[in-house]
Length: 516
Image: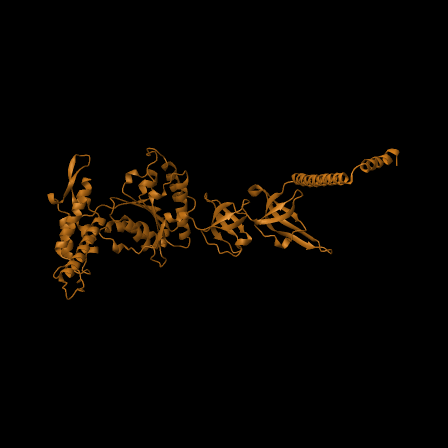
């Protein structure tokens, strides 16, 4: 010890020795407080230094690689109980590589599930398992193989064979189900709910028969020859190498039975006991402001038709107001959306994937507005004009709804009522003059008969029936007495005067609508 070291304590002792005891205590308290503050500052500095070191260590860690677990390649345990396992994985998404990597001993290899997302470290060792991915491409199931694998297609129709992830291993998947496929295109990860777009298609098994349609015998014979015969007598058509038409176009004024004919075709095709399906589509409902959406809906409809027809079931795709959907390309004023919709429709009609057991029937009031490519031979081969009914056809239509099964007045025959109705409707005098029309050759008178349709005739008969019901109720009210307030209405009875009144009411309504 040096002389100075001996001197320092002596100096402090000498300093405190000449100080009062109270002052010495105060000085010691001040020094203790100072030491405590220094200790706290040192603790904080130590903590911040450790935090900084931890951050530096974290920043220095190499990135982990995402991969998809395929299967366990090998799994053994040595004498010391250490696991030695390898796994087959797909790294790098859709364009990635298939690798066999080591599994970290800290992970239990038997818990690794096919289809799950896993992480690989810089040495390509599998170090962590995560859950199933929640994103990927949406594809449609076309076939379920015996070993559980799925044949799926995307929107372009490209087929891919995928495996099921563990979550879907025991799931029942049907044709047309939608699944999420992982980025590598190897695993189906999730089953999605049916698309809401299916609401655009009215799917039904119609109960309308050709016997329910009156006044269209010629049109029915033509559509039977074009549609029903090739389906019910395939062997005969194959012997003469004759193929069924791909489609039929029913055109003509509205309300004359085009939709009923299409439904009756679907019903008639079920002659072998297999119920037919009628897919009804409204042309304007497929038009969408978003680019490519209308084309997608067309693909959806035809895919649905193929799925329903896969088991030999006859399917009718009925497109109403076809002129609004497939109008002539280049005719649009502010939009040329038809330039892509028409080719998409033709691609489905002429595509590589055949439309077996599927018949397309279109209906239009304006055949002149439909693109000529749709009407060419080999597409909508058969074109049937459904005109307004004449006297004979009108009698057949009215007789279908106004018959002897209805309650008629005494001495009244349904056939006489039908004759009265038709004669009144087809009068060409001033009492049935609706207005004038210009057909390009000058003005000409427009009579009630010129506006006639099957729908109007049915409406007239409905008016007759309504009048009979109201007359029955009025008769019951007039017969009620103070003593018998519960008198019930008698059976309605249709009279010739009701026919005349119903025709007049319909004429007035038509004339007023024409004036507006």
